[in-house]
Amino acid sequence: MNETTPSRIDRVMMIAGAIAVCAGFVLSLIGIPMAGGAKGLAQSYFFAFASVATLTIGFFGLTLLHHTTRARWGFPVLRIVEAGGGWRQILFVALAWIPVAFVWREALYPWSNPEVVASDPILQFKAPYLNDARWIGFSLFAFAFMAWMSYRNSLWQRKEDETGDKKWRDLRTNWSSPGLVAFFLIGNFLYTDWVMSQDPHWSSTMYGILFVVGGMLAALALTTLVFCSQTKKAPFARVTEPWLTNDLGNMLLTGTMIWAYFAFSQYLIIWSGHLPEYIPYWLRRSNNGWHWLGNTLIVTQFFIPFLLLLIPKVKRVPALLGTVAGWILLMRFLDFQYIVVPTYREQMAFQPLDLGLLMLLLGLWAINFGNSLGQSALIVDRLPKGHVQEPVTDHA
Image (cartoon, rainbow, N blue to C red; front, top):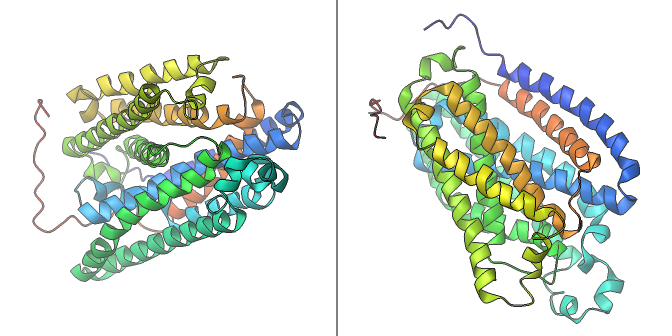
């Protein structure tokens, strides 16, 4: 296989990010007059922030999963995963969170408005949890935890690259295993705070985990898309084998099934309970055009990738697998819109500001992603000792 052409995926991501920033800035300027004032601007920005934050947090979860399991599929794509969920990206998300926390908090969260709380007994009852100090404090704690864990794992990975000492691998596993448990707990409460509390009269025990799983699926889809686009270039060409793309495809299939399970479980629990304090969530998403998006996502986010990823050839051919991964990533952003936006926008309608701010933040994220990729070798050139690559059979 010809490896004379080196991969410049870091530059590609930075150039694509710069283009997205420019396009997003223009779209945002066009969309601001249509947003309906400062509150509409806050809502569009929050959708963009939540989407980018969920992608980053999903990448962080993948790094913990890799260091915990040391699965063979993780080594060739580890640098990509680290670039998406590393401490630089977490700090970027923390900076993007500042307008939500300190500029538009009262516009987004009814419980943060003293006048609203004073006239609402339910919000008064929830005040020990839904209050500004605890909300801000927990978010800062979550950012600090993720940035610290990501920095330490990255540092230990590079020390192992330099020395070959197994103790650095063991350190990552010993810290990432409980860290993965903490990640799911923190993620659950984080999305309860950020997203679910915008509708403080409604609650769901599945909500936070649905976001965490969706974020990890989006991160895995982008990882697979980036890898599959570089399989004919060095250094990715020398590690591209059927077992690797098959593993990545099976991970995407598993993630899609887990996402569908949690999404359907939340719907089934609310539908079977049929209690007035829970059903408004689905009523808003079953009227005024939102039902078209919801019904479409059942097919496009679940059935299409699910059926395609059952085909062995799709998981063995990088071009086909990358196409499916790109499709899943696009559907994840549509699903984020379906979950987040109906909370404060009754009628489904295209808002240029939504897309503009999303492109703006994603563009900045991509620039940071590319810069992180360029900081070190694109491949972790070390597999677990005793690892043997076995061929993938057609029935896999």
